[in-house]
Image (cartoon, rainbow, N blue to C red; front, side, top):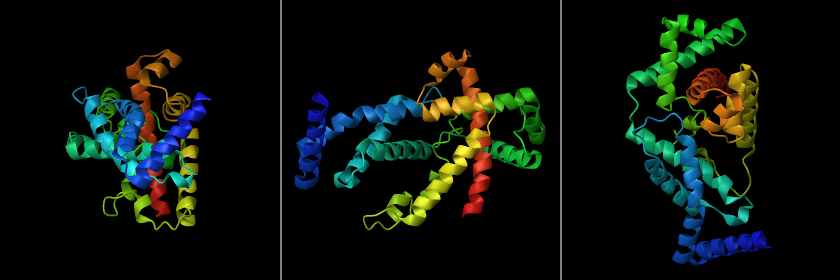
Length: 262
């Protein structure tokens, strides 16, 4: 009964806000969904440098929440949380990009690692080992592990931004605002999304076992780094290393595949 009452109350708030422009309803919705911003910000904190404050991420995320509220249509039958998460995450990532605290040299190094994984695994027909990637980069194994650690701390090793970069090239707006919407999903967009989801699923399935498990627990099950480290009985730093290696492997492979889709 309490849940049903809460759902009715939320619907009433949306009606008041959307139809009457009620500032009281808007404030209530913001307060009600503020924990969603905190949750997304907390998830994105993985691997960020220590000087980045979660409150900064929350501040960026609030703009995403407000944008989602402005554009959300409660009559479309979509849960607001589902709709809002992508915009909150996008706003936080945009805020971090604007800050641009990642040195250009590290960005170049991330691209080099992605390319090395892509070239090697296409040539070998299997997952490349750390030693093979290190040799391709012309560094020793210890240096390669330091590179992975640097990439993890800089949050360049993330799957969240993999497909969104091209979507935002059209005037800096997401594809959902560029594609004409006449009240029904665009068939081409739906087909492309399904192709992307299939490719991601296949790429994840092909990862080495422990990397696949880390990616699955983090992105699909929503566990934190600390929780995953407890599940696998290793240190959080080891989880970050496995995560970075998996993401560099996936980004290299998927970026190559995406080039053939466009």
